[in-house]
Image (cartoon, rainbow over all chains, first blue to last red; front, side, top):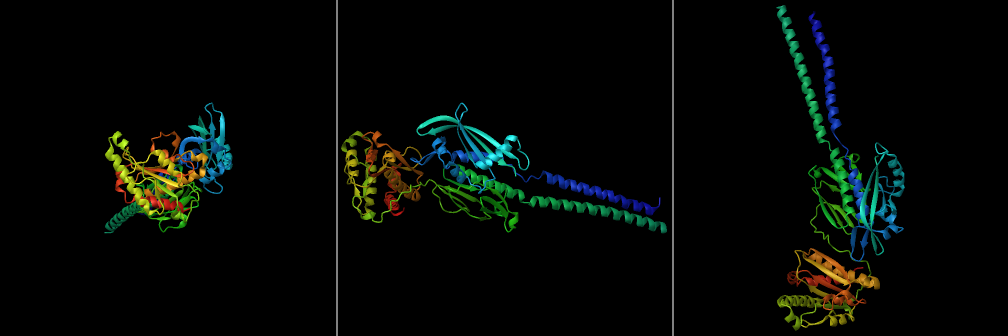
Length: 176
Length: 350
């Protein structure tokens, strides 16, 4: 074979080798980037915290004894729930923005037979809108809504009477 | 010769070819190293983590019913590399001197019923979260010792600029002393006597309040009935007592009449307010573990219970009880001033 041709052949073979090298380099970069996580899923913590805040905080629905300046966590004050201002109090004590598109919740109190006694919503407007999506099962991707349902046993206080009840909270958080 | 030259040229070409490949490999290696280094230096994940963690922490602190002081520090990243800002209900994190557009924020649920004092922080070693009654603060570490167990006093107007000049305003009851009968009945004479003397000393030191009067003189015994009778003539009665410490805690209690809560709400609030002011004054200046105001029904107490003095529903009466006799003994000089300050706050602040 012509020696010049051999040299040219070697030079030409460099091209696919370069191409292969670039491919390997890109693969390494893509593999590294794909394994780097920049999103943290805090849905469980956020939804639990909202439930806690609604039930156990000073401005929540638990009974607060003015006599002793003491909150009784887990004892739900039905008189407080029946107050016409309760919605405003809850919305003010957990305030994200004027139009809260971050999180919403619904609290339902049932007796031990499952009959509903009282139901109130936090961020009612958006709860109603998101609940439809949640019911339809649209929980993934942009526009989807994830929900968490939690039930706890509580003591229900109305006036001077107490009885056992079940408190169910549904917390909804949209994906986007 | 020509053949040799041609061979040499071929070798050189071959060597050049190998060198070129080596240079390419080294170049690729350096590029990869630089890329991995840029991934390592990238702070996006740290900023996301910190903004979400701090938002969750604010929500957690708001969800608790009590007072909290929390020191936030993390091993996951170096807080001093970042600046923190809390605006529009979002916890924002950015590198120091970085463009504002690179700030990463995450929303938290503010409480509009609280007074929020959230400072912007640059390179903090720790972040302090403080929730104290209706006040919430985020700041650097400070030297101030927050009194987390400070009581919230009721809002009722008790302002009176001439309180120190009024007759029959303030009655101090330095306990009931001890009778000869008690001297025989109780084997703890030494302790009872000591308690009596300490309370008398504290009470007498309250003479710094003009026109203050006392249920009894030092060394004199007074029965419950006699003391209750005396409270009728005075607007405010403060009864001072101490007791044997039950456990390792050292605390202070103020008893007030529960029955006034419904029958005389104004008196109830005033009792609570003066008790609150006195307890806070002592809490702020001593190392007590805590203080509580306890409403009790004096009608249900036995006749020998010294708290029976609270019986009168028309007057402001509080029963102060220190847990530890030794504490009262060691603070004999300070307690009168602290009680005086508490009473002063009651009359001089709205």
